[in-house]
Length: 406
Image 1: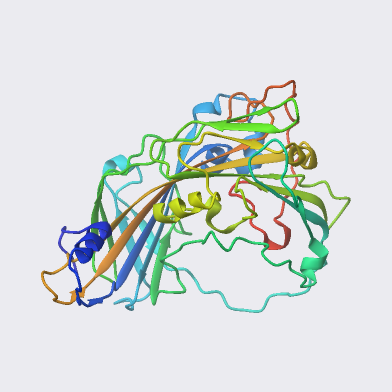
Image 2: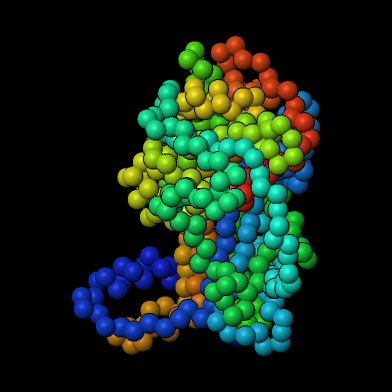
């Protein structure tokens, strides 16, 4: 089932179709779809992603070594098909060039579908979620929006709590595939080490679809280096380096965690986003296509690639207390491939497979603290925050916290 090495970019396909006025060409497929998510992580995100035990491990080593230049890489691979495996269960391999530093290949395996009953009773949580948004020294009108956890648990969910303008885009999933495999998985999950490069030929082989071959000309994005400085008015200036291939930026903070009085009492959790409007969750800390990012920039939900600073309102810093985790996401380019090439004229185009490679760079830091150059430097007379106590943090009622925040 090996296909030719020839491929054509989806962008080129669109251009060719647009050049044929009134084209009535019919298309079928793709039968098989591949999605490869690529991330560059820095700051605390690099420590969490590099297998050092998440934020707890990062905090435990913040006074040792020199992690300021540490960058970690992350790959997430998903392969879905409309066809059944020739010999179940579905399985596959992604073959790399030596410079990727993941060995000859990594195994794509099927996800187990777990069945059973689960307890539905739970104790109603206590506490509140305070929502702030927008760059500036002071919070805008109508802020904060206050969400009572107990009321949400009782089914009283405020309208527009989560983002409707920022989608989470997953074109390949177990739900939309007859056969599905992914990586990392229980069989193998080791991420690429330092010096890895994705440039070159890639080959994906499975027992439920044709071979996929594509050549990447793009590599990991540059790492983000962010710093914070507390201003005289107690707002916080967040600055970062310009990432050459970034299509836009989004920043957010989580603060005030663990200030409750006891079990199930979360106290006040403070959530801020750089969006000019009340947009939380969704794809703001995920991978997004350049076209979607461009549209979100026009709506001032995402910051443009030319922007390299954002002021966090003083009210956010005050409400967050000492525990304030900052996050910054640089959305990046994507590469699209498909096979076979578009046939001439109006002949039917039966697409065997498509492959999409998405890029982003993100960092995580402690706001207003100086941990030896970890991207959380602070000026303005503040003192370094004390190491966080080893306490389990939870997202309220399933509200997702950023990767590595626990």
